[in-house]
Length: 379
Image (cartoon, rainbow, N blue to C red):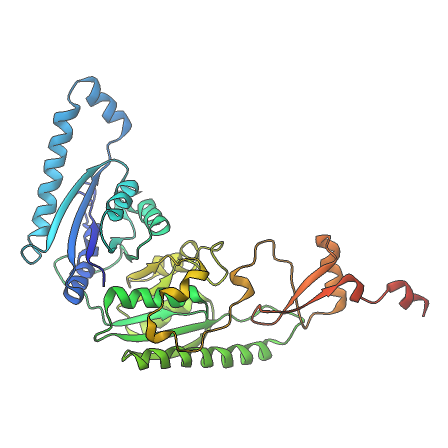
C-alpha cells in the first residue's frame, strides 16, 4: 500500500469554489483504508511581470515570505481537519507541475490525489495542464477527481466498488494490480468491464461474425481474470458491453454506482497511444467518478510486477499491436488478394504481415504469392 498521499491544493483567492479541495474526501478515504500519511502541498506560481516589478523595488524576499506564510496557514487549517499527526504541509514556489513532480519523487511510494482542473472566473487555470503533466510524467499512480464532484472537502468518500475496464492487454491488468496495491483488497468489489466496439464494414467478415467471436473471447478472458482474483479472496464480477468505449465505461459506472474507475494511461496499442488524451480524458470530462490512472511499465516488465499468486494463472497472448510501430501496414486473413496487392502498391512493399481479428500475426503474404495478371489476361 502507498505510504504517503499527496494532495495539491490551490489558494482560496485562485479557487473561490474550492474545486481543488474536492480531492480531500478521496484522500481521507485512502488514509482510512491504508493508514497512510497525508501531505498537503500548494505551489506559489509568481507571474514573470509581477516578479520583475517586486524585484525592481527590492521587495522580492519579504513579499515572497509573506506569500509562503499565508499559503502555509491555509494548508494548516485543512491539516487540522485530519487526525492529529497524520497530515503535514508543504509550500513551494515555482512551476506547479515541476514542483509537484519533484516533491513526489522524494517521497517513498506516493499516490497523488488531485482534481482535474480549477476554474478562476471564465479562465481555466492551474490544474488542467498540471494534472496532465503529473499523470504523464509520474512513475506513481494518480487519482484524478472530476471538478464537478459534489462531495464537500470535509467528508470522506467511499472507496469500495471499483470499475476496471480491461482490453486484454498487460497494461490494463497492471493498472488493476497497482490499484489493488494502493487500496488494499479488504472490502473491495471489483466490476471488470470489456467493451466491444462494433466494427466498420470490412470484407474480412460480417459484423455479426465479428461481434460473436469478440464476445466469446471477452467472456473467456474476463472469466480467467475473475477466477484469478477470486483465488486471492477478491470479489469480482465481469461484464461485456458493446458500443463506444468511453461512453460504455461512463454508463457502466453510473449503472453500478462505481466509487472509482481504474485505468491504465496507455492502451493495448502500446506506449505510442496515450489513452488519457482520448478514452480516459473523455471519461473524466463526463464523469462524476474519480479516475485511478496508472502509467504502465514497458510490456517486458509487466509480468515481474504481478504478485506471486497470480503468476500461476495462464497468461493472455501478447498482441502484435502491443509492440508494432507505425505506420500500420497489415492485411487481415480474410481480405481479398486484390486488396493485398493494392496495399503493397500503395506502401511500396513486397510483403505484408497477415493478422487475425485480434490483430495477432498469423502469417505473411508476398508479392510472389499473388497471381500474375498478365498470365490471367492471356487465359
